[in-house]
Length: 306
Image (cartoon, one colour):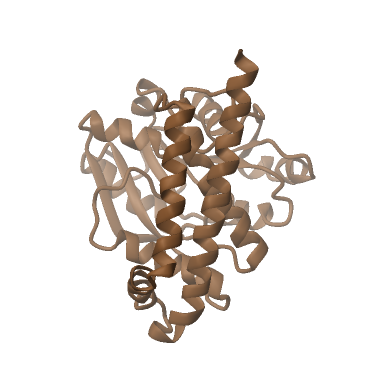
């Protein structure tokens, strides 16, 4: 394949990103590989869409979103993309300038989909440092992931496998689903941790609580709508998980061992142990709260169907 024959379609779902969308678009436009298009599928209620329109002459295409969540937004972008390879990049992801050239090397060598690594550029806050260290702890030495930031896949395969679908009656994230289908189908995956994108993480309590709670909320929704688990099953499982959460901190040792391992991945090493122990407790508490919110959402949906 020629030097620039492969075309990339960068697809970004956006929701109320007016403060950051300019930096995002400048970053994508600044990627050195020329054969690319940038599609932003916008569900915003602020001025994000108006800002995106300013970049039309620079190769950025605005698509009015379906207002059904980020996965449906990306699906719409895939349907309208003209590239050979889809790159799904959230509005807060910052790839390096040579990102697409490095991806192209993998696709020219036969890859069907490519996963990369991400790092958190924020290190001042204990919340962002904790998430960054936790990411390293959970991903080092692994090659079995379904999804990463700046996930990329050949467009024809994405469409063949149903993209990030199917749709569900409630909005919840399932961006790993396409990767799971690609894995089960035996398609060639390349994971290159030397390709690193920047992905900022929450650096204050309120954002950290919101994000971790949202992650917890997705669990019961996924199991109810995707795995077809009963409400009774979910209720018992959540009670059991909450009991484990309480015991982990009452017994001290399980929590301290895990936090110690996470701390070693921090730039401050064990100096972060006690701050991380507190943040870990907040994370697990937010997860518990989010899971019960998701469960009550399932219960409400089930009652509405009757």
